[in-house]
Every structure is written in structure tokens, then in C-alpha cells.
Length: 374
Image (tube, rainbow, N blue to C red):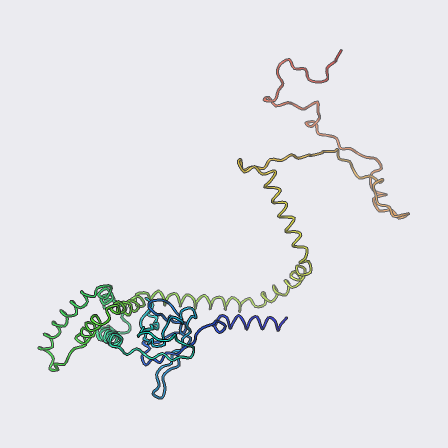
């Protein structure tokens, strides 16, 4: 039994990690993985989820990062071996994903294949834009302890489906900074904002679909800062709850041991009579079904049944009722009454003293009692 349980547990663990799934396992050679690729990050091709990241081997000795990818077999056959890979933000929680880029026809990708990093101009411009955007956020930040989210909200709103407004606002801001540089700065080199504007303009011309990724790159940072206090309170509350629970267990260890010890015979009784519980529940189910099928009237929400109630006069215990075992007699054979003694009814319960309620009186002239017949 223990061996079977261990095998089942092992199979469940392997299944939960995906090792039993029939994946097409490939490797993407990427120098740039953004903010990192957690396990099970999405892998998309033409906007369709085709797999997930199994793990990342960090770069070393001049080698790129090796991103191990599990592709779903039904999609792998439609992905050409000429496809390249790049890392882009995928959702509002700043989780990166791998995007496979179609670079022309080719044979279907095979297990063990290495996917090259996409080095085309749109990808380079996108990475440059995100990098410059981070430089802008760092330069305009207000310190680690400042909870203000003004700059993040402003950049997030500016990049939310506003390509034209983004470029126009950036151009105006660039002119203001250029004029300010002419007055207060001796270095005439391009500013960070100018570099951001140039990268965004180039990105718009070469791959406009990646402009929306700017908003996805900014919005998560804004959301995290806005909810940071709530997250901190939640974590602190969880730690307090765990600490209180642990203290409660520590303070009542003896009682818990006593409870579990005293429950042992109870559980044993249940286990020894387990076969009888099925019959009990079956009978209870039958009784419930009969109750709702026959006595219960759902239209009036009231039970209605015929009951036979028989009443017999009570009698006292006599010596004739005492237990006898051969010549051996019980104590009551000598102490109980010898004759039946019937208790007298109270005066109010005697039939001749019964008074019929006013609303149940028979009509005037009715003869109560036996009548003579001729």
C-alpha cells in the first residue's frame, strides 16, 4: 500500500510539473531577457499562446541566456524553423513573455532546436525605447520612500493608445528641454528625452504594433506603486495571523494531545462499524423520500398524515409481574402490591363532569345518549 501511494504521489508530482506532457522542447538563445522570464511565462506566435517557458539558464562565459521552451505539439508543426524570438511585456503585472517572430517559410520546428534572437530593427528599437523610458523614470523619480505615482500615472496615460499624442507631446517637450539646455547646459549632446523620442519615432515607422507595449511596460509599475501599501498590509496581516495561530497551538499543546488521544476510540468505533453507515444513510434517505412523497403537502407547506393513537388504562406493577427464574424470585415479588390498583381519575376528567365547549354544543332539542327503538 505504501509503495502504491508513493508511486501515485510521484506521478502526480511529475504531472504537475509538466514532465509527463508531450511537449516539443526547444531552446531560445537570447542575450536580452528584459526583467527576467519566470517559469511558465507565456510563449506566443502570431498572438496565439503556443507554449510556456520551462526555465532559463543564465548567460556565462560569453554565451547567451538559454531559455528552455515547451511548445504544444498541435502548434509546433505550424511554427517554421526560421522563426526568431524576442522578449516583450505581456500583461499588467509586468510579466515578460517570449514572442516568436515569423521570418519566412521553413520546415516545422523540431524538438531540441535552437531559436535565434530576433535582431531586426523593430526589436532593437523596442528594447531601446523601453530602456530610455526607464532612464526617464529614474531621472524623474522622487526617492525610494516617496509614495507619489504622478510620473507613472502621467506616462501610463500618455502611452495608453495615444501614439500620435505621445509623439507630439514628446516633440514639444524636447523643444522645451533643448531651449533650456541652450541656457543652462554647456554640453550640447542629445538629452535622454530626445533619445526616447527618436527611438519611439523609429519604432512607429518600423513596427507600430509594438508601440502599445510601451503602455504595458509602464502600467504595471504604476499599479504596483498604487497598491504597495495594500500589499504591505496584506502581508503583515498574514504574518500576524500565522504568528497568532502558532502561539495558540503552543499554548494549548497539552489540550490538543488530549483531544487527539480521546478521539482515538471514537474513530476506531467508526472504523469498525463503517459497513453499517451505508445502511443507515440508505434508510434515512428512504425515510426522507417517503416523507416528501406522502405526508408532506408542498402547496400548503404542511404535513398531513393519518395517525392511529391507541390509549389503554394504566395499571400498577404487581407481584404477579415480578421476575422469576425457577425457584429464584426477584425482590419485587415480596414488595410489589398484590392486587392491581387503578388510580382514580380527577373529578374534572370523569365523563359525567365533561362540559362541551359552547361552540360545540349540539342543536337545541338534540337528545344525547341512547334512544329507544320500537
